Image (cartoon, rainbow, N blue to C red; front, side, top):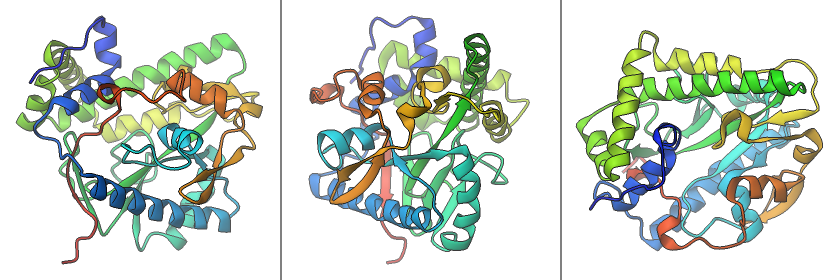
Length: 316
C-alpha cells in the first residue's frame, strides 16, 4: 500500500520528515501493531520510568515538565493519549547541568543518559534516557546496542536573544545544523529496511529518503555525533533574556518561542493519577503545536511511531 503526501513542495519534503514517516508507518507492514493491552502495559512502563526520573528531580530541586503529546494528554485525557506510546519531558539548560550530576549518582545503575557533549557518542540532538533492562527497535534506529532500549526524550529550554534580528539569524543557523545532523545520521543508518519503509509513503517518501541520503553523504565528512554536539552548542544563549525556546522541539528553534512568564513557573495537571508540571501558558503552547488541541483527530491523522520490536525485560 502506498500513501501520497499532497500539497507539499520541495522544502516541505525536507522539513516534514516526521509527517512523511508517520504516513509510511500507517501504511507499512514493517511496523509492530500493539494491541490495547500491550500498549497499556507499555504506557505504564514508561510512566514508571518517568516516576524514577521525577523522584530524582524532586530530590535535587529540579523542575521537570511534561511536554508535547504528554502535556496534551494531561490536559485532554488526564493521562496518556489513548493511542500514544511515549513520554516527553523538559527542563531548563541550567537544570540539565545539575541533572547530569544527579543522574550519575542516582540513576546510572538502571538507566543510560545519552546526550550531546556528554556521551562519547550521541545519537540525537537532544538528551535521551534509556532503560537498560529493555529492548526497543525502531525503523531508523542505529544498530548500536546502547540505543536499542525503551527511552524517554528530554528537551531543553534555552534562553534566546531578545533582539528579533539576532534571534532570527541564530534560529535559521541552528535549524540548518539540525537538518544536516539528522541527514548525516540518516545516511549513517541507511539500509534496505529503511528504504522500503520510506517507499511506502509514495512519491514524497521516496523524495524524502533520496534528499536526506544525498545531503547526509555530502556532510558526512563529520559524524552525526559531532554534528549533534555542534547543534547542542549552537542553540545555547548564555545571556539573560525575556524569551525562551525549545530549540530541539518538533517546530525547531523559531517555532517554539514564548515569553519567559509563559513557560515558568508552570502549573500542575493530572496524569494517570500523578501530578505533573506543564507550562504556565499551556493553552498557547498546545495551540501552537496542535491548533484546536481539544478536538480528537480522526484515526488516519493520529501520530504513530515506527516501532518494530519491543521487550519490557531482557531477563527471561
